[in-house]
Image (cartoon, rainbow over all chains, first blue to last red; front, side, top):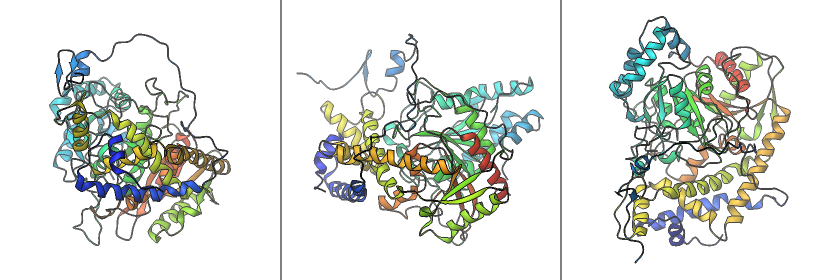
Amino acid sequence: MSDIDIKRISYLAKLKLPSEKEEFYSNSLKDIIKWVDNLKKVDTSKTEPLHNVTEKTVSIRNDEVSKSNSVDDVLSNAPERAQNFFKVPKVVE
Amino acid sequence: MKNSISQIKKALIEKKISVGELYDEYLAKAKSGNNNSFNLVIDRENNISSINDSQNRYDNGNPLPLDGIPLGIKDLFCTKGIRTTASSKILSNYIPNYESFVTQQLLNDGSIFIGKNNCDEFAMGSSNETSYFGPVINPWKNKNSQKDNLVPGGSSGGSAAAVAEGSCVASMGTDTGGSIRQPASLCGIVGLKPTFGSCSRWGIVAFASSLDQAGPLTNCVEDAAYVLNSINKHDFNDSTSSNHQREDYLVDINNSFEKKIKIGIPSDYLEDVSDDILNQIDNTKKALSKHGIEFVDVKFKTTEYALSTYYILAPAEASSNLARYDGIRYGVREDGESLDDIYLNSRTKGFGDEVTRRILIGAYVLSAGYYDAYYRQAQKVRRLIKNDFQRILNEVDFILTPTTPNEAFKIGDKLDPISMYKNDIYTVPTSLAGLPGISIPSGLSKNGLPLGVQFIGNYFEEKLLLQLAALAEKELSFNE
């Protein structure tokens, strides 16, 4: 197992770990990755990955218009809104 | 013994108690409880129209299947107009505009919600210690050290404690790797995880979508059948919801089996377990042998890989599912100068340690260069685990295992994550295979704490599984 770049992983996860906690998470991650490493010895050369465990076909519904989620419903939990929009800091210059 | 749903319904029909009195009785217990089993309790005035409607149906002689029954709901189910937090800081102000499919079925059948049960944050935990609202305390005490507060198990720990302390008749939980069965076992009650695809996941705060399944925590097996009858329905809003024909789980539940039943006991599950745990299996075997049920030894080939597979797949799915918490559309927002700062600050301050850890594991196993070695390999091993179960279920009708490797432990006792993860050693394999499992209380440990056994059945055969569990429950007489 190669070393874990905790800064890169936390950036991928959109987390900004406080520097005093980086080592805590890094060690914890190393322990767990080492623990799950035993899967590598399983021969799966002839095995397909399993996505949906019951492998039942997805049921198809008719494509009909139905009413749900008004604008006010959708925005009712927004931390900040402006008229009918979510409000965020300026993104484009 | 606590009253069952059918006993309560009988008392309501015979007017020995009114729906309002019943609600008040449970509400008082929920409010005075010292176990932190609820994140939120619903006052009578906020349920008054449901209480009155229910009483009217009893007065008119046409009550619904769960009419007037006070239920607890794990704080992972979206409940319209009622705060739903997943026991996380990041959702601590979230009020859904819609009702989850499962809780809607329970409302349609006349039940009344007492409140939202505490749970591990985003259902990630096996001891209910990761909740933002503090740990839940198991109502049971170790008879040799009465003053210690014990964990109720997790993640549906509040649901299990609430049923055990008597502050709701039954509670809805969710199970990803054992989160219904394990707390049920540690709190001395019944917990059923239905087959994956039985009960819609729509409106349940998502943890690991290929594993999450809703199910009841109840005082007895018959109550589990009552709740399952209500919630086990096809739903177009969940693409993994199966659209097979459902049965009435109450019919025949107390009947004996028409054919000879064979149960497999995986000997590899019982290596290195304590006498307390072995006794549960022995007692169950003795109790059921009286009914002509045959027990055989079965051997899994994949048990040693189950936890590793689970702790790759579940965090991977979690890291993807929890990407939605960004501080923009709902949930708690932390200040930041740029949009990116808002994302980073809201997520970093909004998630607790265990959730952060699992998001990091997930991000790692899904990242470029590691995806095939970890995530894809785990998905392949998952198929081998499923095949292993299918091989054994071709030989036997059910599988009997302990539910947990130990009794309830002290709050704060297990600090390192891996020893905590090992608590789910008997429940995780069933979850990976997607099979239904039920934990029923089977006896007490030397310390006087409840322990359970798990029965595993075949896909969508909950009816037979409940029938077996009801028979074992009667013979083991834990509740008497």
